[in-house]
Structure formats: structure tokens, C-alpha cells
Image 1 (cartoon, rainbow, N blue to C red):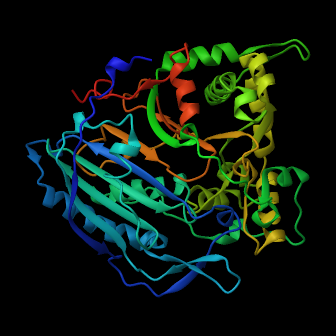
Image 2 (image 1 turned 90 degrees about the vertical axis):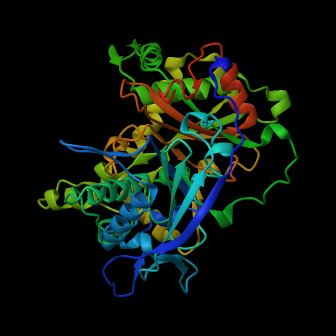
Image 3 (image 1 turned 90 degrees about the horizontal axis):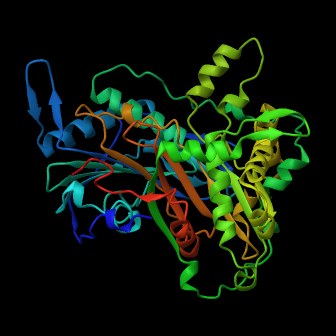
Length: 479
């Protein structure tokens, strides 16, 4: 890994100028919106996303206008108030009902909006270490409600817009719908996609039915064994890093995982995501010492969006398609595989990719997601969790959540496309979380945000393949 290209570390401060709240521009009758059964599988987690813009300029046919920060803030707040009319769930709050389950109170309780100033230039920010440069400074800490937004002006005139939202209310797809709609209203455009809060799309069946495979993926929290006491180890610290992977390296990994299946005389074509995931799984496994780590198994999962899977073949398919395309909420599954570390070391990359392909097949059907809904219904009101996160010290686990369709270029607030973007997903769990996204270069490269144990990150950086390179200002063309 080319350490000499990394950004020079620069200490800087971000000062809050003003903190206020923004409510929907139209009045709303207070009402309850139940979380769906799939929402109930999410613990209280905050997801953060940020967008970095160079010195904002509005470009017209006759003149280019440099925007003052006060004008930018006014534009964002005005458009936010308009966007919340359609996305009213983001101006509500999570409240516990009589059964002890979370529900969404839609009361137009407003969204926190923070204005801030950072005494740093965009090119000086160490994006490679988001724990230091992003999480504590450019994305807001949500103190109440479901959503918080922060606009930060930089010394160079650049702008960073950061958002924090409650994962129980929205998955990344839903948050992206909101951000694109906000951008469209800033530009005085009609919304290209209205959100749908029609929970009937995810109602359980009567009678309910689910395959035994759902029991392998999810578990009621009350059935888990007591948490083992932790032995303090600096290498067990969870850290975040951001890398880039060139398109050439991704294609090379894909070529290594594609081979001729001698048993079936068929050619097995593995996707770029499957190939990337296989490399990541095997790379970490190859650095695990069974004797010193104390465990022999390694779980690896991928997040699957169920929107396209849930569309049925009924005569009403067009209306259902539109509803699910704009569905606001969580429609996610996390299928995973578990293998012996020694087996992952010994087997080929192609074999590991085939394992991933096989466990992903479980979540590719409509019945899988309908079964998940029925499974949650059968276990309510007991809270449940994805089993891959319930390791309790008896192994290692990593989850990959692809953002390959992230609509960053559509998130244009009137002053151009962002120069850089990233999700930031800090949480206290020991399972790792990896998010590949398209690079701002638009050349097939990926930006990869990793949230892993320190020793896992060290294994990745020490890999002789040099697949992962630290994100730098030079790479982002900020210098």
C-alpha cells in the first residue's frame, strides 16, 4: 500500500454557528405510522452520509454566481421544509408503544439543522480516517427525532453537507430517495419519485409461513446466550478507513473467480461484488491465527435489497412495482455463509466466490422476503436480530453492503455535483461493515468505506496484492 500518498494529518476545528429546527412547510395532522416487520429487525442505529462540494457556483447561460454561505443555508432549509411535506416520516420521532415495540409518531416535530464552519480546506481533510475527520465533525449527532442535517462552510469556500438518520425508519435506498428529492426541489424540479409509506405491501400472510432457512439468518435476542466478558485488547478496537479500488483491479478479481465448472460443463460467471467479497473474506481469513485468535469459524454476509424480489406476477404488478420502487422503509435481508478459517485459507478464490453465490441465492426470491415478514410476526413482540451479528466472541464476522447504484450525481443542490461522498456507519458491534460505492471519477473505480476490527484492517493494508489504496486528495483531484 502506498503510504506516501496519504493526506498529511491536519488538526482542525469545526465550530457550530447556529442550530435550529426545520419543519414541513405545510401543517400535518398528527398520526402514527407503524414500523413494518422488516423495520423491526433493525436495532437503534444511526447511519451517516456526507457530500463534499467545491466552491459553490450557480452556472447559467449568461453568468456564473458565487454563492454566499448564508444563501446556501437558506436554499437548503427552504427546500428541506418543502421536501418534508412528502417525506413526513423524517420529521417525526420514534416512540415505544404499549407492546414495547418502536413506532413512528408523525407529528412534524421538525428536523435539526446545524450551520457550522471548519477552519480547514477540503484538500487538507484526511478522508482516509473518517473517525477523525468525518464522524466527529461533518456529520451531526442526532439528539432527537429521526433526521439531522449539517451544512459546514470550509476555509477554501467549499461546502460539506452531512446527514444522520435513524436506520429503523429508513434504509439507504429510502435515504437516497429523500436526498434526490431534496436536490430536485432545490432546483425547482418536480419530484421524479414520490415516497410510498403503504405498509400493506409488507403485511404478514394469514396463515403465515416461513422456510427453515429464515431461522438460520435471524434469531430472537432473548434466546441468545449471555454475553461473554470481554478481554481488553487494543487490536479488538473497531476503526473506520476509506479506500479506493481501481476498476482494473476489480476486473482482475472477477477474472480470478470465473472458471469452468467441470461437473456441470457450465461456465460460472461471478459478479464484481461477489468477486470483491470473496477476496475480502479470504484476505482476512489468511491472516487469522487459530491459536492466538481463539476461534476457528468466520462468517461473511451481504445485504440484499428486496424491493425487486417482492414484486409479484399479479395483474396489479404495475401499481405494485411503482409502490415498491418508492417504498420508504427497510426491505433488507442479510444472507451469510460460515466457514472454517483453515478452509478459507486452503481453497481457491473461485471456491470462495461460489460459496458467496450459493448463500446469496437464498435471498433472491419473493418467498424469502415474505417468509421473513411472517417469521417476525410469529416472534413479535420479542425483538430479533440478524444472526451474523450475534457472534458473542466465538468467531469473526463481516457484512458487505453495496452502494453500486448510489445516485450521487443526482444529489446536486444547484451548484454542481459533489467532489466526494461517503456513508459513515459507526456502531459498537464487533461485526465488520464494508460499503463499496462508485467513485466520483465515474471510471469504474470504487470507493470502499470499511468499519472493521483494527487487526482486520491491518491484514488488509498488509496484503501484497495492494487492492485497497487509501483515499487521498490527489486521487479526488482536490489538489
